[in-house]
Amino acid sequence: MKYLFIITGVAYGHLTRQEAILNKLKKIDKKAEIVIAGYNTSQKYFSKRYKMIKLKPLYFNDELPRVKTFKIIFKNYKILFAMMENCNIINKFTKEYNPDIIVSDWEPFSLFLNNCYLVWNYKPYPARTFSFLFQKFMLNILFSALKLTNKKILIPSLEKKENTKNFIYFPLIIRKYPDEVTSSKYKDAILVMIGGSEFGISLARKIKNISKSFNEKFIFFGLKCRSKNCIGFSDFREDYLSFLKSSKAVISLAGYSGLSEALVYKKPNLVFPIKNWIEQESVINEFQGYVQIENIESSEKELKDIIKNFILNLDNYKKRINKLKIEDGAKEVAEYLYGNAKS
Image (cartoon, rainbow, N blue to C red):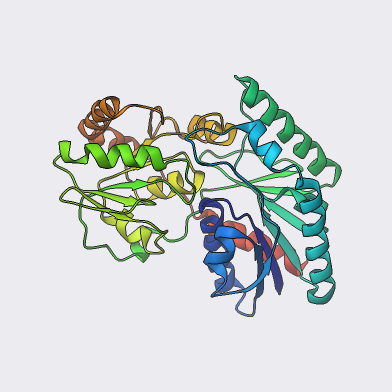
């Protein structure tokens, strides 16, 4: 079968989710032909392994630990033209390639593509602020459009939910399970994962500054450092799961894929959601019973107390997490896509 995957180039959570599905799909369909369309992080990540189509990127202001909705809109004033151009790029390619199925992770122009299945993790969440209200309004427009175009949305979920006409739910999606991963040499460290954007840089720097206050080893992903208490990597590491398997806990933003991986690997997670971003608020609303949630704009003094309290309560979080039984969402999605590609 022929597959076309369209993957957003904002951060890393979307592309790792699709990597998990791709790996399972190649095991199910041994003759799978796969092409990936993307930009920025997705283009860089997949370009050495798959044939790539370069798309016009979206702008996302990530220099602060909060989303500025109207700045994003202003910077994306050409978004309609970019969407139209991306649609033309894909339509021109599909005429020649003729894929059996198209899968898109969080690229809105995909609503207007034929035979396209969408993957995202947002679940309806109350709009408590004006910024949230506007974001929710935009999301509702997308939901209305997908219903009009009769699109199917494939959604990973911690809790089992009933499928509807447009929404198909699956278990959490992760790349590899613990028994498939070799442990790293760094044992019982605390991982600080801030993803592929700059939203968490200020938080990571504060944690780096106070790391000497703890008798712990901190390993940073997204911030380079080296001292007695911290080791940092500036770029994304494909062997991150090896570090996760060997770690004692994780500090992160509220990315869905990262939180999913931490839960499956039974690691307590201290979470700092990005301010004013309704998707991350929706995520912590779903995971709140299993993670500790704090303010991303906390001062260094406040962070010392937060991390100290988190470390003291690791056993309590482990007891909650250990009760979870999570099935293989990536395999189920791959089987679903393969079945629809054949039909």
